[in-house]
Image (cartoon, rainbow over all chains, first blue to last red; front, side):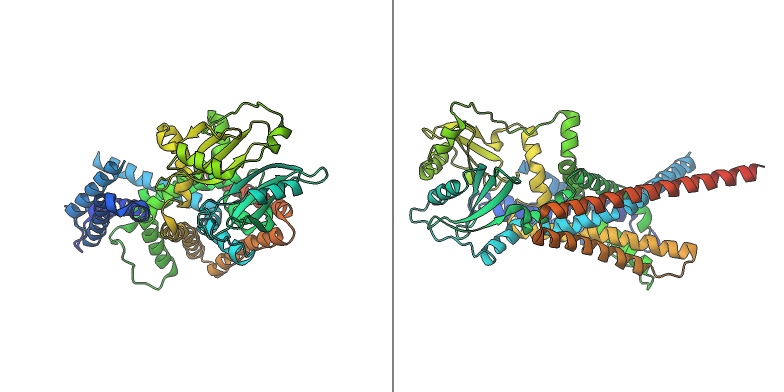
Length: 84
Length: 451
């Protein structure tokens, strides 16, 4: 793992965090759209998954852990693809 | 080998930085104007609703049978304006709001006019009217969609969209190089304005990148649509061409029973929420009901049903959910661009994120001016230039709005065309002259050193 003197993970900072932020942009719009339009009684699973993805993405960006970032991104991509 | 690839990578990043720098510098003001006007434009229906309610006092009472009533109002208006060319009625989203009859009137002498009449859909009476072209809603839309420059303003906005996509992508490619040992979202501890602005520029730019890219690409498509449609032979996919079985005069005389028409539409297309109703006046003998299907992400009023004026039987149905993906892609652009698919909270998010591109254009300009000051050891204050440009832009937008509301759209549009095209020619000429001088001086330097 390429790290600087300040224990700075270059790959996570320069590649994974921007990618997670990119997906978080989409996720926030998706989340608001879902809460505004999905009927709670029969789409609650989807609402839960999108909300969980938002928490996972935000948490992984704060934690900046490579595995968490990759996992959160993969999870949201799966939710997004499944939504179509 | 590794050294060579490292050098090539550095050269590539330098190129991306150069592109980011020059494209941002020359289109920054356009991106800034579009960001500001776009952040307001997402609220056009809400702003117009408030104007109708408080300025025109146009409110509806509850209809007695649950269906909107407007037949008498339409009848009286079509008698009052027999020279009308066409009309459509827009039903309100909120039943407390008034319906709006949009009528294009072509008097025997004078210009064609588009008038809007507000109708109480409970008591079926006309509450007020306005000239559509001189309204705030039209100003907000036209200034964002075509900068009030009818000749080629829309294409200019499209070019602005391409430029924003370009700076967003090049920004992403040079991000790592510029962050070096800096973590997101840390700011360096310094009083240097250039460094502080650079930190804001990188962190905000990266945080709103996907949003800005979507806005940029959809904006480029919407702006350049007239050119793209011509070049690639693209036309709007929703097509319906009716036969003309009667004389236009007879068609105009048929009285529509709107209760029956709305019920027939609901029966044939239950998911459609009709919002715009049109009747033919060319002899087609049709009633068109356009509207939305709740929960879908498509532009307003794209779903449609056409009924016969004689027996109210459906003649054509356009349900976008059942159409090919190319149709859906065509009609998703405007909703994605204006955030018109998730209610008011999504519009607020769109406005906040939309303003980031304006902030990025200003912060980019600040970085450029402060760097130039340091490099050329200039003594003037760069903030002066930034404040002057910002104030001039706001003054221009306010002046065009003032002319629209006091004199009219046509004069405002002419002034905007002159100002924008003069500035554009000036900017292109300045860039060409600057480029030529630089090339000439480089050539002279080269020949003098080789001698």
